Image (cartoon, rainbow, N blue to C red):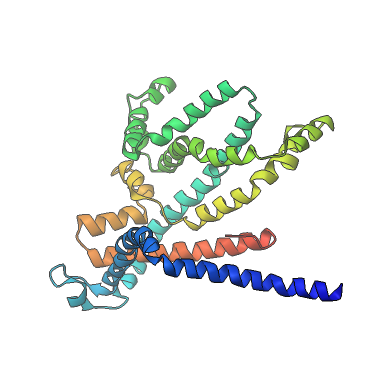
Length: 316
């Protein structure tokens, strides 16, 4: 018996090695097939993802479009020092962080709550109609959305007619963040709830029925049955969104920006756009954008580490 067990144990590693050897042999014999399928994807990734990374050298140069990157004068961290010593640096950084953090605080739980509410609807037809209404705003472009917001909040818009006032909300700096975050939740919460709704469909029906028999209320059912089904997905999404705190696109902020709400609407992304494309200060705008990216990477790693410690070592 010992001899047979030893022989079996010796055969298992050999079987694995043979399988790996066969895979390598197959790939070497049919390498043309892999090249044909992988080459377009690798070429696109190289051309559009890795080669443009060389453009960050502009941040360390007094860039001259005629001389190009290789012929421009090297100035080191001059533009980083200029931005960090600027009197407006803290204002732009604060506006960016406030928009992101408040948006994460109010916007992140909304898709989860929507998924829990949708999961309580038992009538399939009614559920699909509600989902359709919730998903529709996601297909509206940012510029069209900003146009709708401007019309709704104008002096003669529906909001003022409803309230019986004549307030131009778009000129109020203190109202900008509320408008930005609320419109973002309206546009994206329904679509973002899809993944949570799909995950909730995998929740154990036996556990749910057992909880109902035991007299568990809605909150107890969510805690015991539904929350474990989406917990890992919630953690991953939170890490990704928290790590992108500095990655606010300039389109929406720029489209909702007016001369009178500039105090709260001017963020790093809009500042980079104005300096780089409108003023032609390419080196300075690249330096500011690179600073923004570095902060993003640091935040992503930090949030991932913190969440991993709080979640039994599970992170990204």
